[in-house]
Image (cartoon, rainbow, N blue to C red):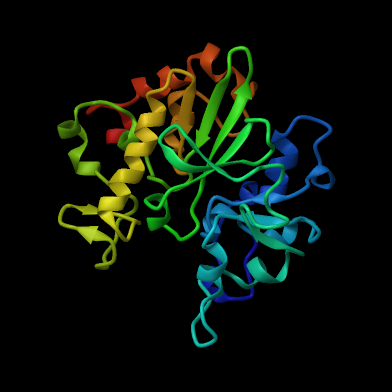
Length: 272
């Protein structure tokens, strides 16, 4: 992640975190930056998009409803995003707006989400909204991606709905995971914290509802959920950086979902 001009957004992140490099390295040929037609963000937290100015400025940036009002702030307020968020893209649109609706025909209900947008119009990629998931960040959205057909299988990219698979997986019993109820990162401040836990959500009631939606989707046999920060999944599945030899389309036959679930429990790495 390249440092911005504002010192608030300077981070010491390894070069491997550069999104353009990851895209060209992990995507099958002939995928290059020139083949991209747009960028879709889960939400406007800098750790989820990095340095946008390293992508071609012609690419439209597509975000969830409510994002633009939040990142713009007022003339007297500091912007909550680095300057390159606004300065680089030619176009920023919210899902469903003119120029940001793909081939979708409006909002539909799918699974546990009341608002879902069929972006390509063929059921392959749904951008889903819920009031509860926006309590982490205004405009936060998740994506349901069809990765195989006959039978259809999906990966649900949960963004920051929560920060560990230990939270949303439908087991073990709640008492065994009570200490990590909505845990995200240790915090010394009062914002979003309750006795015994710390959270990145401003409304815990809505956060629990958001996690419940994810849990319900994870219960589907043909859906595997992955949230952005569950990096321990790579270790549970024996996948190191650059070692993923097969795409997500093989998750079901490879037993990846079961592999994730086996790593959950009082004695697992994720609980320690």
